[in-house]
Image (cartoon, rainbow, N blue to C red; front, side, top):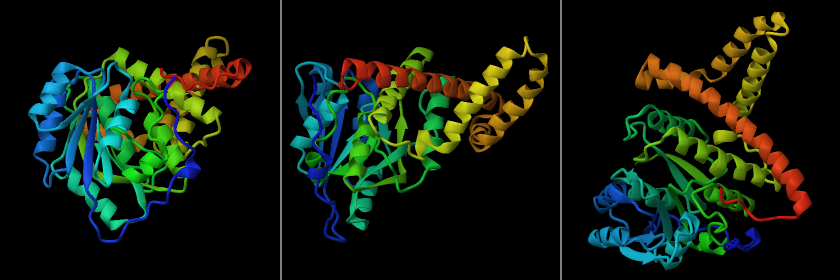
Length: 355
């Protein structure tokens, strides 16, 4: 069993001297980073201004990752066996000397002003505890699913509220004192999952401010496939997120859990129900077009964004994948409710699922 976070009540208020620029330590967890990791390190080496330090945590102690990090002048830490990014980030944060810990994933390329934007945001808001940014709108991988997934993520972030209700570990920064007082990320998440979302919930419960800085951008280098996308969305996101909700975390009207998304899930299942029942009840077929039209209208801004960025053909395919996303996301939520609320109560298990 991994390390549990501390109680939110133990966290100090995030109050810093106004007008003072905090020092920034970058922490990168990596496991077999390859060329994407090299691009990430290269971008941070060119940052202006540079971070106080770059700390790389080789999750599982990969020799290639350690050699590459050292070649770029980073401080290198390692773990004996892979334990997931939550544990690696915690280790890096404990060794950091900066006022702010800026977490960056090994498969993203920060823009040249990323460190400056992080430091500036905390300087301008002494009561700010944490912030996070967004993917840019030019994903590196050219296949359809990579373009769709990363553009969707970009759109959701840049069209959400700046006063945020959660956190994002791929490009997120937090005052080190607050992070350590809260116990960091929950290390029971043994693979990339929702450890950052869970941490964001604890930050808000402790009364801290989290800001979405839409101008803070990173380019995602990951290439998504059908298998990796479905596994991530269902087993690393939807099911563990449902577990958090079952444990008492609220539905937040923000990011992927906003009211529009929840209504879209309901409409998707209504559309499927109408299609399934139409052969037996032919009069129901008349409802297919209105339900589909409402679903299109509800998400018209996103689909218009897809069309403007990649054309009509891409947008049409993206609509189908987005509706599939509503289907399997809603299905996973239902399965999670049964799994964690009913079966979980019977077993008494409180372990956080890693996948």
